[in-house]
Length: 314
Image (cartoon, rainbow, N blue to C red; front, top):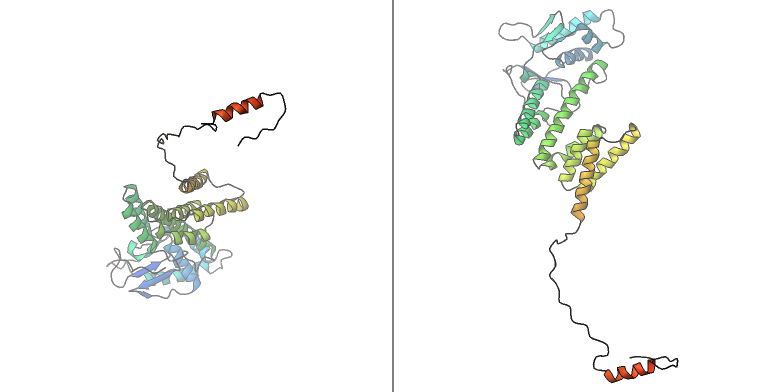
């Protein structure tokens, strides 16, 4: 995906750092990417950014960096990584207070919406759903699309091999998928399904058992005039469910399939006029012996005799 223009919120002054989690972990200042240090330092920063404006317990940070057997120096090393994060974040406001403070609940990162893509993403997603709730589907589609433009791939995919970060990355990806489904359904309802077909196909390939995503793909194909492909998507899903889980698709999914199947048959059925046809005057029948009375009388005489004969009438 193409990175959207950097957005600024309440902390959007020149020199502010903008962090991204919806893709690889990155930090930019004035459009220039900043170095984030060694891997363990990046893990600490990612864990703090995944829980913005919320205290993060020390144990959670320790487990993110050393999930199995933390060394004796873990707390000391953690302090070094926290100091590096503070230097990267810079002071908050004119008072110079730290952006990253320690309290009884753990480390608390103070960050504004314009500085973190996940905060901006959440704000746009909520606004899009609110617009859909009001019946403003064009507005909903626009806001949800703007949120999705911040999504650059699997969240934190450069750190997913860490168990602590993987859970947060999965949670973020689930949010992105839900917003994509919301957006696709809005576009389908607006009659613009074609814009969502390719993206839905790619996401279904990555998440083949996600039913709402697959249903949106079926609807987008069907609305785009690709009925056979839409039905094939269901057949593939039914076989996958049986093979992987020993289950059938949900009743709602089966009903969607039957509805598409019925509409396809209706489209193939030839048109039949329901008007009562006008009566047609048929010609009166004509006897085979009309005008041949003498021949008919002779024939009857022959047939009335007692002898067995073969009589040929022409």
